[in-house]
Length: 292
Image 1 (cartoon, rainbow, N blue to C red):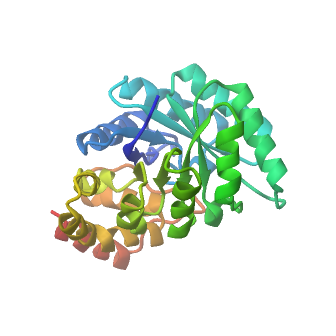
Image 2 (image 1 turned 120 degrees about the vertical axis):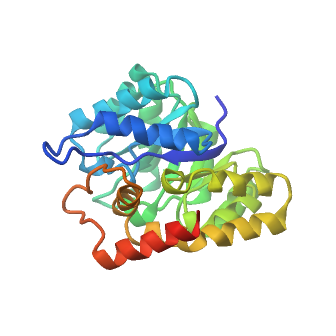
């Protein structure tokens, strides 16, 4: 299955009384993303606080997301685990639940060699037939994969088919495009680089922004696709300050605060993460008002 366009990220709502996952609210979040004209739904990323969920909660979110989307768009399940054993277990669950793709990023305590990273991806590929998107997010995961390594994994590991690049270096994207002669789809994972990435040939943009600003990211993507560069630039700078804000303030906390401002309580982030303070909530309210 080929996936492109806007990949919308869910947050994971928590019940204010039980502090457990609120699946009913998760359904509402998914519906809001679909209304924002996303081309795929991605669950269990950093916006979804996957690192703070129990194994049982992770399974609940993955299974519910696939069932609720019900084939309307492809579903991508994020997997980031310290051990290969845990990553392969989650990959098997994602396949069992009916996901369309997994987005795999290695977490590091010890510094991993390129051979260790390669073997990690190889074993996950062996455990599940699902297509794999490599996710390079060195700031969060502590592992920085070079374009050469990621392209070697696409070439040599059966199910590895795409790359999400979140290092913040546009030259990485240019290199992926150049070295693969445009044959390997890569996705932008840095909100503030969306315009540069799309004009550099990115197949899509992975973002939680449609949770709060609807189809504005899709409008930007379509403007670039239609070579309407002046319009694309205008759309991007309309969103730029908001995109910077949600990243710098913490995706989970910022998006959940945005939902609250819109009258939808999805709970706060899970400790040790903290909700936005009053000043940041006011700043976010103003940014959202400007984007109406």
